Amino acid sequence: MKETIEMKWCGDMAFEADVDGHRVIMDAQPKHGGNNKGPSPKPLMMVALAGCTAMDAISILNKMRVELDDFSVVVEGELTEEHPKHYTSMHIVFLFKGKDLPVDKLQRAVELSQEKYCGVSAVYRQTMDLTYEIKII
Amino acid sequence: MKETIEMKWCGDMAFEADVDGHRVIMDAQPKHGGNNKGPSPKPLMMVALAGCTAMDAISILNKMRVELDDFSVVVEGELTEEHPKHYTSMHIVFLFKGKDLPVDKLQRAVELSQEKYCGVSAVYRQTMDLTYEIKII
Image 1: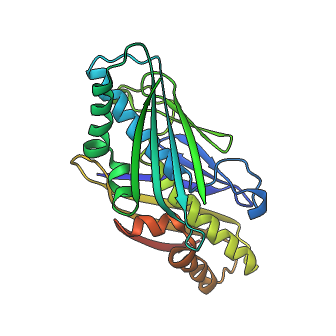
Image 2 (image 1 turned 90 degrees about the vertical axis):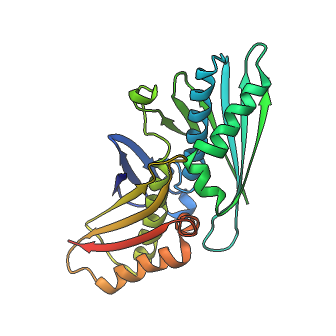
């Protein structure tokens, strides 16, 4: 199965990507010649990871009939200081909020994503230390 | 060096990530329970790649005093059919437009990014077939 994204230059260090008709603007910080009009590209690797695993979790929890009041995800990445500056580890924190949440089902949903479904995790895990934890509020 | 992104759930399959104050919306297609309010997460892996290597190239070409009329990047990714559905290859097309462009400098700028500077490419290359080509208009 093939997927394609297109991206055009908007002057200086700004770029606009088109993903199935959705625009994603990227830019560099002023210290790197940009104007900070959008996120820098590298952290989008963490955004892709957070989104992919969170959509899995929500989808599985829906099937388990678990109702959440709130849900958020934080990803922390460790970058090398030397070129090519790249992530050597990422840690995902899943924060679930709700009344009398079933801990075992939350853990199972996250495990299923991390071990079976999340294609972003599957790629990153081959090259970096990928860990996660679950917090329930 | 540590970097962090935060992402909150917006109901159904929609999520909003915060990257240094910049919002990135993600959503699933209706066939996957979403409302298509934003890009799906996985192609953002290709957006991160396109942005990272293109910013390197522009930055190097600026130092070489090469002036472009236009510049765009296309990334094609090949996904597995089986879970976890993940990219097994990506191909980057760099499209440069301008008058009397110095081919050797364009090639050198792209090579420097791909071989030395681009931290997204450095990660992906360890797990998938990563190729590129340069087109000059």
